[in-house]
Image (cartoon, rainbow, N blue to C red; front, side, top):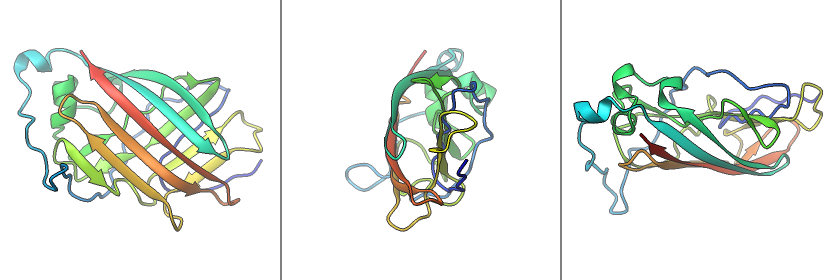
Length: 198
């Protein structure tokens, strides 16, 4: 089995069973910007009524390259590393932890186990975060099973790799990555898009 160490988004794809909740990864990122180049501050603090509603994230993931996979999944915000008082969509956006966790799958996606390990460090609220999570703590792993010789564990620190993220005021967002490379020279690119509902 070929093993590669990566830094970037983590997508572990394995038919052997669902992964558990991962510890959040804090990474540095450029300040969030709107299309006008300044951080959006339109999202106010969550009201007590909003905070009482537990949010659910519905996500779509698409990976191309050495190990393609496409599918959807959902997560309860209470399953993520979200403070108890911030498990509503409004709280997910407000996020007092200074790190916004990109939602990762907890169950198989299209017959594979997929795990996304990425966090937007220096999170200041809704906006665009160019280069978010583009460091050695972010990686993507795609594995079909324990004996998978086509497993891809791709780093974000290889030359030419990029990451980008955007979080909107309603709790939805996008995380994209390009040219993540593993130790064997395999590349993958992809995106995670999500919405949040009470």
